[in-house]
Image 1 (cartoon, rainbow, N blue to C red):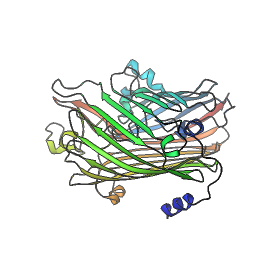
Image 2 (cartoon, rainbow, N blue to C red):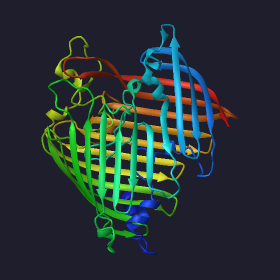
Image 3 (cartoon, rainbow, N blue to C red):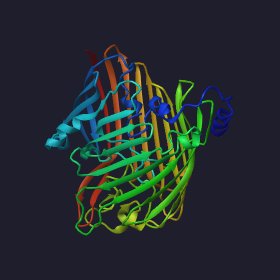
Length: 453
């Protein structure tokens, strides 16, 4: 049904002059990191400068321990910067929750995001904050990467992109101290002056990512390289068909190729944007597509997730969740992805990569966001690795699952109900070869007031 609707869109009458690549890049929404994240678009109109202060209190359930909690947040909109700052302290019968205030870096963690507001129609994005939904190119090596999977150890990073007629530059780091994951992208349109659409929009991209974090002395540093090509083959009614191809490799591991196509519109009838993608991956041994993913900080060559119920005093190899990169057997993957955004109010982003192999390496992501004026704001984020076929996405959340759920609901006047649930991970220690993490679940219902000034 969905595919039929999109094919119908392709059949719309051709009208007007096809925009060139430069004009399109200026008017379109930038799709890099959190640039197009509707949760951070707290400025309703470009000319408004509303700032809100939130004071909240309630209870906090982390693992099996209840505590009281209080939290303060600031949504700030100024001419140069939009930002969200928030801090929470928790305490119970056993004392305060130590992770809230146990190191100087907790001051940086108050910054959920701070982003530069460029002049209108400037294709620039600069942001500091928690890294989320980061992707380089088509996502062959870096895909849905985030820096907050272990919430108490979340890091504040930065991201930047500048899109031009012939050149695109982008980069990110998951920590402003530059001691973690760092990546970048350079893309060129060598024939941007051409008249034909498919040559004018042809873009060749080079991506690089590395992990600079501490690791065992005998462990290789994770590095990945990626070259991709994409171009708009044809268009109709503001809808574009864009095939792509990509080659990626890890110098100390394996390599893979990918190809597919996007059916997309950045501004369809000025109401919404969408992107529908079908793709295939062909992987060698010791290669997993998008390995620098949402789970990377807790499941990488130097860190592993411990399965629930395992004995922490006598861990066996079978007690660790997931397939390490160095032990992946290769095989093929089929990708289906759909991203739909109704401007200023709704987002739905679905991603499923089905792995055709003996190992459970399928991957699923879902993002939902809804905002209805000042009355209701709701978000859902689900990340799952280690899946089998499509229907395994409906199985219970397991050790390779993460969830973020939040609602802000106006009860009366300035009084709001704030509800947060988060399935993430906590670090429980190290051994000689890797850091160890366990699933951590938290639930926090708050009530509070919101002031505008």
